[in-house]
Length: 161
Image 1 (tube, one colour):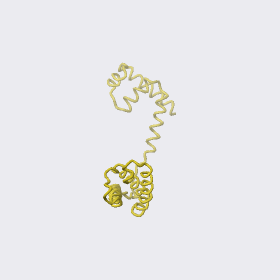
Image 2 (cartoon, helix red, strand yellow):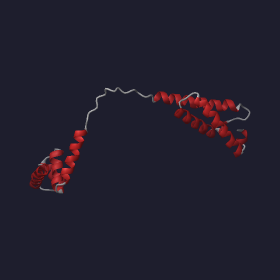
Image 3 (cartoon, helix red, strand yellow):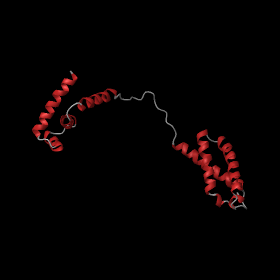
Image 4 (cartoon, helix red, strand yellow):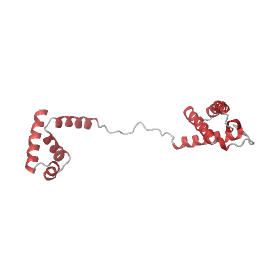
C-alpha cells in the first residue's frame, strides 16, 4: 500500500488482486454468496477510496481488517432490514379476470362506434356525467348528446345479438 500511495500502479494492481482473493475467503465464511460478493466489492471500493488514509507506519493488516469488518456489519444490518416474510398460502386473492375481459370486450365494442357516439356513451353511461356536462365537454348540443347516446346504444345492441 505504501508503494501504491507513492504512485506505483503495478504495486497497487497487485495489492488489489491479493486483497480480492483474501476478501472472497473472508466473506465466504461469514455471509451467503450474493451478500458475500457485495460485501467484497464494497470493501474493495472503500479500500480504494480511503487508500490515502492508510498510514505506512501502522499495521496494514489491521487497517484492511477494520474495513472488511465494518462492511461485514453493514451487510448483516442490511439483511436484518430486508428479512423475507413467509406468505400464508391461504391468502384470499380476488379474481379480476372476468372484469378485465368484460372491460376489454366493452372497449372493443365501443371502438366500433362513431367517435362522437363512443365519447358521449363513455362520459354519460360509464363515467356518470350529466347530459349538460357531457355537452360542455364534447362541444355537442345537449340534444345531440342524447341522440348520439341513443344511436350508439342501439348500434351496440346489434353487435351483441
